[in-house]
Length: 133
Picture 1 (cartoon, rainbow, N blue to C red):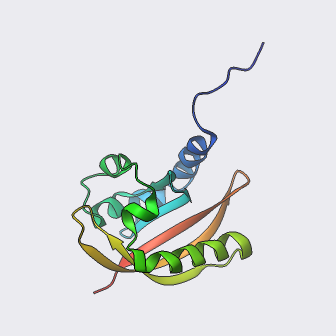
Picture 2: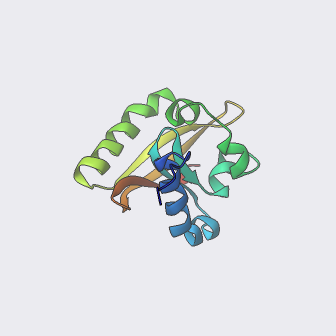
């Protein structure tokens, strides 16, 4: 019997899988968290949605603009990309300050811990975000 071709992008399957793997942490953590594969394939928890001014993960998921453009203030982009490259190339975790943009355009200064993780042979970046006072 021939294998049917799926209309679902392989990265979507990967994100669903990592979300299930990390479900307890994503659901129960009091900290904002997101897992990033690329600008269009990521997963996050309710605390991250609320931090950015969205009512739910579902509402946040409807944003189609690339992640870095939608949520990262321009002055923080270089540091975030640099940390991401180090995570992917050298498997190095980072602790950096990142300024985020809320749905309203308001900015939020955060401390972001980025950790490289491997799932199903793919590298992703797990982010834990704390709002700075």
